[in-house]
Length: 152
Image (cartoon, rainbow, N blue to C red; front, side):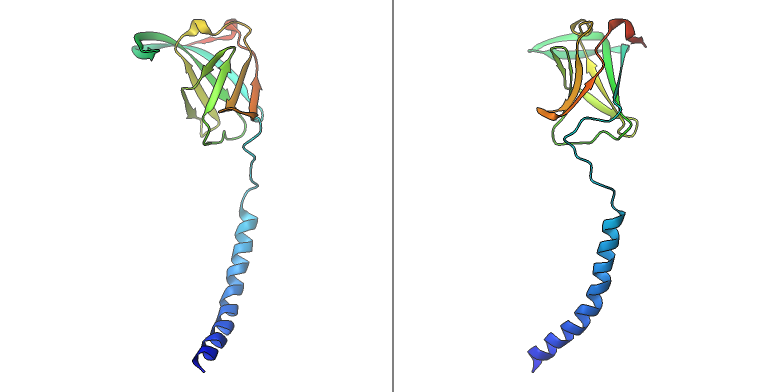
């Protein structure tokens, strides 16, 4: 008798409580924004390059050798859409140089990459952004032109 009573109670109250929960779940699904595919190029991406003279020299270690740097190039990639945070880090490739040091700015609508050896950026070099080795995420940007570098 008790198992039957329990079953009947659950059926009555469960259905009564379940319907509003399902309705709420359907409503929250409608409110969610459409999912953005992370494996696609950024929309309306632009590149700006600025020469920055550091107030205090930065210590850089490359291939086990320490040195101080007082002038760097900052490559700022901006997009009309928020740049996604992914498990794969963004990489900016300038010619044959891969830049991996970056920071997000402008409410995730900009990524700023730092090049500690400005002379490695060759005039006319192709520039693109991608996440890790995911070629589907590659965003082609305008080529690097030394004459277009802004001064800090």
